[in-house]
Length: 128
Image (cartoon, rainbow, N blue to C red):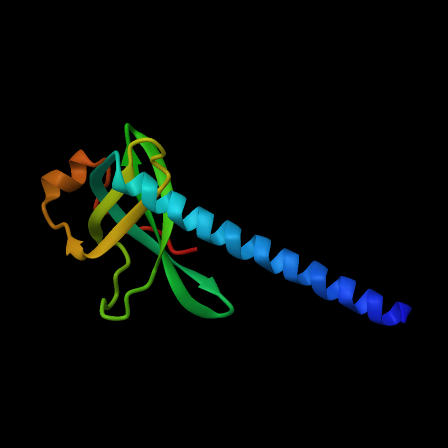
C-alpha cells in the first residue's frame, strides 16, 4: 500500500513539474510576442554562425546593434535559404527590451549605406 502511495506521489509530482514547464513556456512565448507587438523598431542584423545542437545545424546566430549596444540572438534555420552566413537581414526588435528580436530571412538587406548605418560591416565573421 505504501508503494502505491509513493508511486502516486511521484506521478503527481512529475505532473506538476511538467505543468509548470509548459505554463512557463506559454508565458515566455506570449511575453516575447507582446514586446514585439507594441513598441518596436527595425534595424539590420548580420548572420554570424551556425549554432549546433546534437550535431545538427538547427539555428543561426545573428548580431545587431541598438543605440550602439551589440545584441546577439538565435533564429531557427529556414531551409529555403542557402548559405545564409555573413549576410544581412531586417531585424525587428523591442524598444522596451532590445534583446528581444526577430530576424526576417525574407527581407535581405543589400544597401551598403543601411548596413553601415546599423553599425555593421562586410567583413566575414570567424565561425568558431
